[in-house]
Image (tube, rainbow, N blue to C red; front, side, top):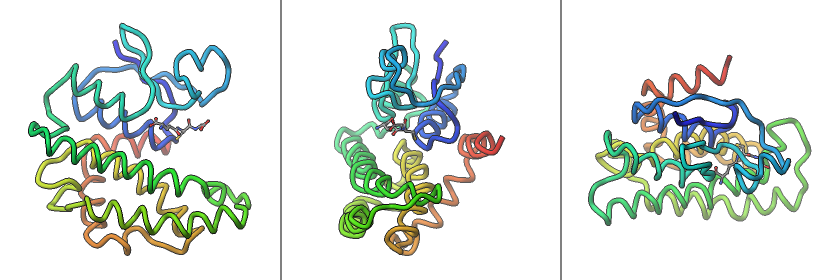
Length: 205
Ligand SMILES: N[C@@H](CCC(=O)N[C@@H](CS)C(=O)NCC(=O)O)C(=O)O
């Protein structure tokens, strides 16, 4: 059986967990913090969570994991059938991670009450608006983030927003929901899905 290693506090863990739930795949949750111990690095080469244990070995990187899940369990499809539409969903997921999540992450210390260095705050203020503008050019909210179909990009987007918005507000005085018209209604629709409700409830345990 598949085993998902990680912890519910991680937004990346929840992207993969909700993908497993949406696909109806059975899995076992193995609680594991990020670690630089050799034993864990053999499972996840940067020591990050989540990673997925399969019969063939481990896979890390959330986007690689969810693509794998789509291949072993094609239905329900969470990537469009059309190659161009699939590429656009992947483009949006990557843009969310590279230009929103990872920029906001520089200032995550603020979420734990830790000081964020001035130059880091300045870099967030410079880079985050560009990332927000980039994803805005790709988001559809009609009603889902990439168009008419619910896709992996909705799960990636939802769990990106949850933490990135806290950092955006704390470090750059930016509110993603205000910056991205239509995003609140979309976010609420994703939050209403059983998979997301379960992941959010498990976070509070
Ligand atoms: N690109 C990775 C990012 C995963 C990630 O950053 N996970 C965080 C927890 S939310 C982590 O393990 N942080 C510890 C670290 O960076 O060493 C993915 O897509 O899975």
